[in-house]
Length: 456
Image 1 (cartoon, helix red, strand yellow):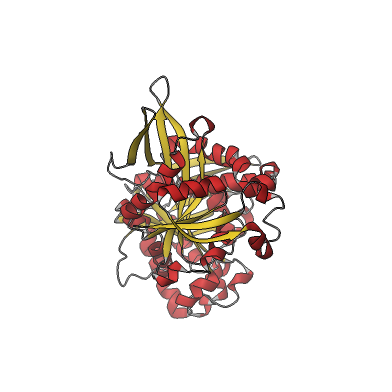
Image 2 (cartoon, helix red, strand yellow):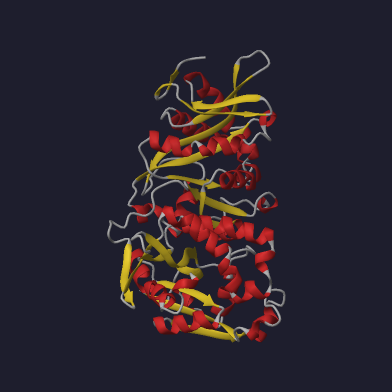
């Protein structure tokens, strides 16, 4: 095997063993380039949903451009391969992850399959603008040869993305995942889902690029970025949104940092579920599958950098969490996924007075839950967290923040914070639309649900 690659000497990124068989991930050897370019222009397109259902293998002009683009990508020296040994103890490629540095805004006239879709989703939740990133490492396709599938090679390749980003001197990796299989691998590898759009919705904008029937394979596109990356840079000390005192004790509210995520996820999947009325009266905290989904979702949402935490100092002078408000940036669209933290209620109440349509809003910050730790309750912390809606909207240049409030206590906090009540419905009315979701007896705690919003 050659010791040379397009980027110098061969680098070994990781090694792992599956069922006694050794695999390793390395940079692309010069002798691999023809095989990889041919594979990505044939077998990859037979597997990739948009290529398969779009019958792109029948388009010879497209294939020439597509293959040429992979030669260009591979010669940049940032792609990686998973290797093993065959029965003759010779190194052989088991899997491929093509990647390259690209720019935001995108380079005009550059042919890259799927890039128009990637940049379309990126504009709906633009982490490049948020991070002031002009260059990032982009996924150009993941392929595992059939005889090596079932060994989690896709996941192992994606886990190396952090290393290749560092080696390429970029702080962001982005990828558009069009297949349910690669989407599962991305999640297992610890990537964060930045954006999701169903193929049905994307087809409205790109009718020629989303073939009919692709939903038989996968329901939509997901844009992922690296989980283990710096949070948004708000140019310290601007991470602190506000400070206040209660009974002479100093509190401050700031963007959630990595060091707090595990404790916050534990709170939102534990005590919060025992206080939020719908979860409490449905005994959701006893549903292991539901709590597992909650844990995964909160892990992703907190690491997006929109959520806020209220902190104070303990008796040793160290920061301690007093309260948390989980927030996410979402596009204006009906969320079909059954598990999106009450977004179905937001959507339902919004239809009575659709402020998004009235104000031509295509994305907004949405409340995903607020919790104040017991020893800090009845100090107005909930209201102080909600007052930050205005500050977050202004800072992020987002016009609107809104959320449904299912508890009479959070509704009082919203009123005190100066949020605008857009719609209120008693639970017996909501139960007619969501009979399986609004439990009997919830009115003992709170009589109804309210949709509130704030503008920058």
